[in-house]
Length: 294
Image 1 (spheres, rainbow, N blue to C red):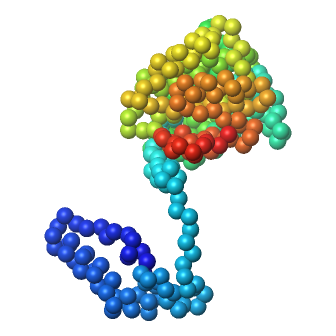
Image 2 (image 1 turned 135 degrees about the vertical axis):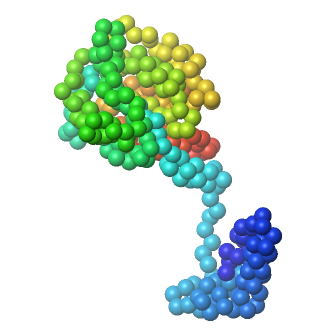
Image 3 (image 1 turned 90 degrees about the vertical axis):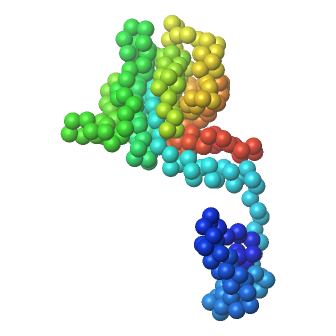
């Protein structure tokens, strides 16, 4: 069969096993081996059809995938099996009560998307949850921790951390109100993720927001970009993913901020969900010519 011509056999460092593998390969490529394969309905090395009804005489040759596409496919498969260290940050400002095109409020769309993603993460994942709005964590602090980053399977009383995080998602709706304290929150979340980086996990911060920064006491965009760039290091890679929801979300600014950390920004109104962007977050290197969804 054709595969025997092009696919190298795996050999062993043990001489006895290596000899047996070599003998098997020789037998399969010999006249009797080729005849046995043909009789079994397999295509042999010369490409001729084995005469099986419904099988074409010649195989269809498909276009060979580019090296970049092969690398992306393999890295995606490998990375999707990695456990995560994921901090999700949800905008709880007053405009999150506005409805989206499908009739859901923005806060319901955001928490539903994030909650669904929780059901897709590997079992060894560690997750945490913040919400943010102006002064929500107290005077001068726009973010509030609802759940610390911890393993989803960790026992917390009679339940697990993952179940408590899901309940915390459901509680955000009743806490919506106030201005959008965006810049300080992004910096606090990214800074914490870098400082507490775990080399055994894929470290990710996802922020969902529907607006521009409205906190007059914030650090400002230039200072935020400077801080994020300074904190970004290949020794502690943290993927920063920003999702904009609604017409008020400034995707240009979100892309600047995410880009400063080597991350990505997505338009939630065009179907980008937390579950979808986790795939992008987990692929560490995107080959040239292969672009993320937007």
